[in-house]
Image 1 (tube, rainbow, N blue to C red):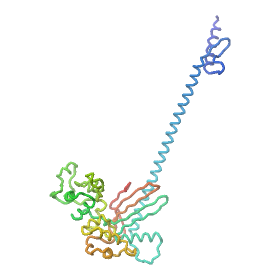
Image 2 (spheres, rainbow, N blue to C red; image 1 turned 120 degrees about the horizontal axis):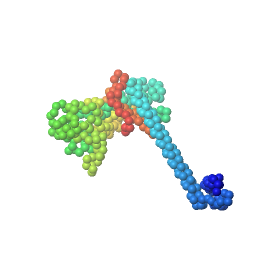
Image 3 (cartoon, rainbow, N blue to C red; image 1 turned 30 degrees about the vertical axis):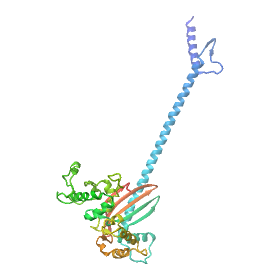
Length: 371
């Protein structure tokens, strides 16, 4: 056999194999070229065709998963961006509320009863009138897609934690739910922490007490700078200061004392027009019925605010002697709570403003997700 014939046979077998690989006839499972019969079995060709389909399906599944994950990630990112945008707007609305309070506090109320005022001017004048007699005020304003809520309350509506006596301490602690056998210990520990010197009170604790040694700090021997500083004093737990579960699970939860204490108060007095019933309970001589009548008389019999403390006490049927422990008049320190809200997202600023000569300046400031 010539070399040409051998080469032709090899070429024919090569092309035959290619044809068998790429063609899949339905009627005849064998491929014929010339006089020879050759080809791949039908089962093998079908297996190769099926594997290609499986690979294609896997590619589609992977692509679908990638696209779905990308779409979900974009949805989450859009939600986060939207939230922070709303939060920033709410934060600046809260700042605007503080500035609004500064404008209100910068002027005295108008004494001209017949003066014609615009709606906003009249609203601000009403707020000033209430504050000048020590009242608490609250107002709401819509601004664009959001709104602000501003509450102004004299700091004198709370007891000055650095100046109250033992009797007031006892009334406040017992009313908040602190067990009677623990009250004297808390009072003495507070005295040891704030008074000068290292002399121990009977139930107190000075800097040499293991409580302070373990925590690595000493008694301050000076007035506290904030109500939160009470947590540094032995015995004052978060539940006692801010309210929460009692040590004994069977006892009722504690009410807390932070909402009736301040470091910007009016000595050993509290405001007659804005103090809560909880704060008024610190006055030992006032009973529950007298406290209720005092609060009801604040609005005035005919809707007009009382013009003096004596008038308020007379309307409430309370002896004038209580003017020694009840304050009156425009406060020097005002607690301002401003809440900005945009589509359900809220931001809060809690600050204390000091008023002097028509100007107000912050002496305390907190912001964030406050209650």
